Length: 251
Image (tube, rainbow, N blue to C red):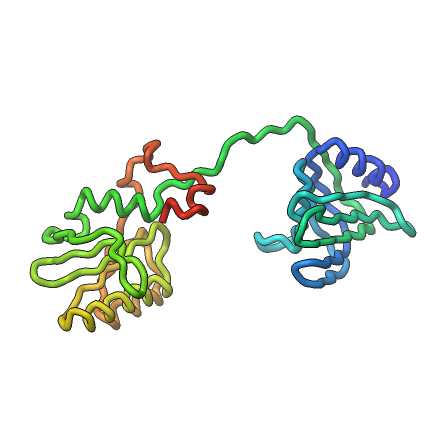
């Protein structure tokens, strides 16, 4: 088990040299910034990245217990038998975090790691929309498309058209559909019926659906249709980067 003194010197050297550090330890945390928080002593995993990001994970769940986003100024020092990692953001908004380490279970650092790939989003709702627009029979054999992304006061209809003599609003989900999707479709259908003064078909198309969402659809006479994303070919055109998605170029 690494001792605190030697780890303190190594940690500061690794931070100065922009190494990736993975530290498993028993620690407490104080934080000032987005809020004020104090976390008592417990076993945690600390990740320090070359860009000065610091993430602290507990032993359960996928969300960080706390974190510092870059750029940060971080120092390691030993005080009263405790190893402290003290980090402050060097730009606004102000954030500060102090991690007090009492025991170290494992310490690893890495240099010359590379990751030049960007996250690409594939098979999004926009891809479903594009695919179904070209394969209308998958919505319904008698589906006639009137509009893609029809704008209403409640939001955009993914697909809008008619099945025989009845209007249809279609809501698309590229992942498992839950209650929010079912409720959104109901609002769309109800608004259209009030606007058109006639019965409208509401249809939710998704790879799968939660049981409570399916109950709501059946109760309100809405249609669920399963759609396999495997039908959409993984092409360069269908790829969207995370940055593009955040910029709103993908739905």
